[in-house]
Image 1 (cartoon, rainbow, N blue to C red):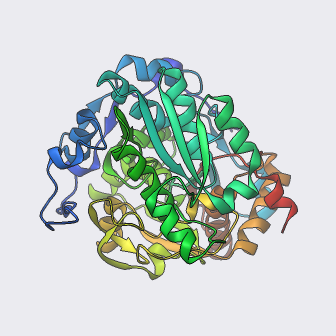
Image 2 (tube, protein in one colour):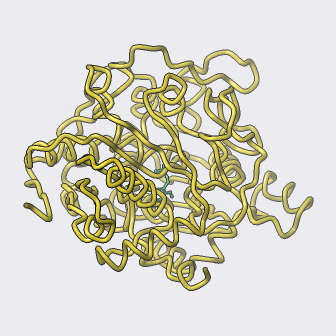
Length: 424
Ligand SMILES: Cc1ncc(COP(=O)(O)O)c(C=O)c1O
């Protein structure tokens, strides 16, 4: 029995996997907010570089990963896949539980997989500065890290409630040479409007996105960068699932259940999409996206066109949404406080290829505590949603007396989330 399944550096994937090319149904296009017509590459070029716009719209099955990106990945990829033997024993389950551990990256989560790629393509097209939003700070610190790798400036709008809860993310973002502001802020019209209505507004990803886009549009040679939701972000995250497939095969396993927590969809999709291909080809796999009950986008949202941000700057995306003005309660899993979902993940849910489940904050912190004690890794509160879902599945397996193979994404560690563990 192998505890830790590793790959060689030469096995870092050479191409991203594009599920759009394999999907048996059509993805509805993003619409221009003013004309309600499908957006054109030209429309998007104000905020994204051409290479990423092409990836966003691509129907090519594989997109080669440039050497410079693979070089940067070598610092932490391939990431390990670990058998959760401690958890199996604790749950007395016949199920085998594996997790892909993305917390080994320099900033502690899966987010550098796309931050590095986005910084690379922007730099190549002459961008001087990237501007973004962040929830819990995992994305902001990852983009700050990637920008300094490629010699670019970076500005981060961090959702105020997380800015106050997780001060060391601010330190990390500054350490990597980026600027950071709590959102809503007085630096933008969108932020000022919201503060005028509610000076104590805890903020939301939707508000922070509006602020970041507004600043991008008024700043020369700056582009905007998004850490989740969009097709090109998910495309970059497929390195997780591509590695996981090799790792599973190397121990002669095929997963019966694949789980990821869900904020905008990128870590769930990153692990799941390369395996969705197998499901389309007839293999039986249960895919589960786990979200907070207080921000139940997939389990209670409506599938419709909606804005990605509060001010309505983004194109309209066809997605499960709680409404772009929804401000979620201030839960500790700040990275899951998003009103919308990736259009690709939404389409899979609509067609029944995946399912979604929601957990209360108390449940996921109990799961996080158990996992910390039996596996020795303190998970990010976001990732604890995936742990809780894996525990539910492992208990089902025990009740049914079935030996199932469960694979989940441990998207990040919680070493900068200690105040959350203290406070609950
Ligand atoms: C550790 C971790 N997991 C998951 C997420 C949720 O994002 P996504 O659904 O895009 O993976 C975040 C977002 O900040 C995160 O930091």
